[in-house]
Length: 393
Length: 200
Image (cartoon, rainbow over all chains, first blue to last red; front, side):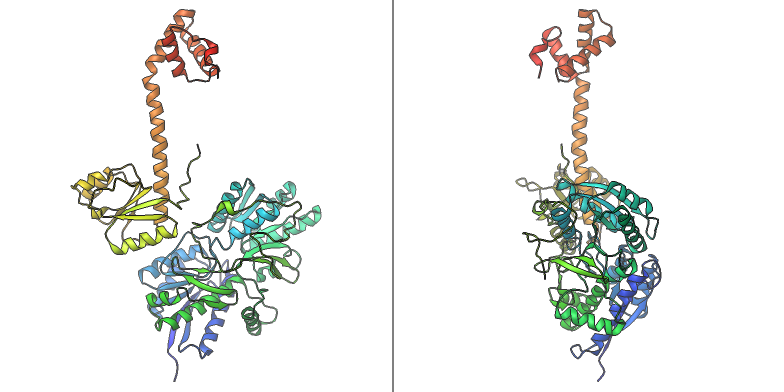
C-alpha cells in the first residue's frame, strides 16, 4: 500500500544575494524529505514543492500564495532573512498555515503561525557577549552590515557592554553586499581595539575577514574577531588561513561530538561529497522538516492547530542535540555553543551550555547582574572553568 | 535623573479591560512572553482603587460611551486602546481618554510590544513635560518678584537695569541659588542678603 503524500512548501532563494546559504538550506530540507520518505517510522511521505523568490523580498508573498493555492500546502519551510519572513507572516496568519523558519534571527517576534527553529538572541549574542566580557575585553569595535540583524544585535551588545562599564569604541556599517572594507580595516589597525564584533554578512564579511587578516599580519598584531553567524562553508569561502581564529556563537557546528551528529555528517557527505560541510542553517532546516514530520505523526493530521499542539514540548534528538518547541512562544529550546575556527575550515567547540536553553525572543529574562566582567590580560580567549562557562572535551 | 527605558517592560503591571476571550488570550500570552504581570477587570465596572498599574489595555468597544466607567477610566495611567469601531463618536470619546497608543482589532501577537513601548515612552514624556511646565509656571509667577528686586537694587546701588540684573544673576550663581529665590530674599531683607549666610 502506498503511503499518503503530504505537500510541503520549500521557499528558498537559490538565486540572488544570499543564494549560497539558501541553497545549503534547500539541500538540507530535501535530504530530510528523502529520509522521511524512506523511513518505515512514518506512515506518510512528503511531496516537496520548491519556490525560488530570487532573494527579492516582494516575491516571497507571491511564492507562498502560489504554494497555498496551487499546491494546497499547509506547511512551508523557508525564509532566510527577517525581511522575507515579515512578508510571509501576513499570508500564513490569514490562511492559518504554518511557516517553519530555520534561520537564527534577532528576536522580538512571536507569531502563532511560525515555528521558530533557529536560535533566538539569548542563544547567540548573549553567550558571545558574556564570553567577551568575562574572557577578552570590555571595550569593543563593531563592524556590521547595515540592516536589522546588525542593528538589533549591536543594541543588545551595547546594552550589556555599557551596563558592565565597557565601551563601544566604534560602530562601522556597510551596505549589504558592499565589499569596500579597507577603510574599516585601516581604522581597526590604527586604533588596535582589544576585540572586534563582526555582524557583516555574506561577501562583505568574507572580504573583511581576508583584509583584516592580511593587515594584522603586516602590522604584526592579532585582534580577536567575534561572530554570531559564521559557519563552515563560509570558512572555506574566506580561505584556509584568513578564516582561522574567529570566535563564533552558534547552536550547531559540524564538529559536535554525538552519535546523532556523526551519523548526520556521514549521511551529508555521502549525499553531497566528502569535501562538503553541513552549515548551521542547513542543519536547522533539516531539523525543521524532522520536527514537522514528528508533529504530524503525533497529531495524526496535517491540520495546523493539531500539528502545533503535536510539536509542543516534543523532544527530538537532532544533530545539534535535543530540540523541542516551547509552546509559550513557538521558538525552540536549543543548546548554545561557542567555538574557535581552526585550520581545515573547522570549528573547535570550547564551551556549550549544560542543557538546552529556553528561548527568550524578547530577552525578557536577560539578567545583567549575572554577567561578570573579568577581562584577562592579553587577547586570547582561553576558556577556563567558571560559574558560567563549562569546558567541553 | 535616569530615564526608565521604555524598551524593558519586564516586571511592569498591566490591567486589561477587555471581554473578547480571543483577544484576551493573545494579550495574556504576549504580556507573559514579555515578563509582565496581568490583572483583568470588567470594563463596565468602576476602576479598582486599591491597586496600581503601569499600563491599561482597554478594549474601546467594550465601554458604553455615556457610562460612569467611561469617565472613571480617565486615570493618570497610560492607556493602550484596542479599536474596532472607527466611528467619530467612539473616537471622540477615546480622544478624551488621551490614549498613549492603540492597536486595531483583530489582534495579532505582533504589535503589542510596540504599543507598550510607545505607551511607556509617552507616559514618561508626559511626566517630564508636566515637570517642565510646572517649572515655567513657577518662573512666570515669580516674574513680579524679580522685577521688584531689580528695581530695589537699581535704586539702592544706583545701577542701570542691565547692571542690576547682572549683579543679581552673579550673586545667585555665587550663592548657588536661583535668581527667583534670591529676588525673594532681596524683597524680604529689603536689600542684598548677607553673602556669608547663603554660601553653600
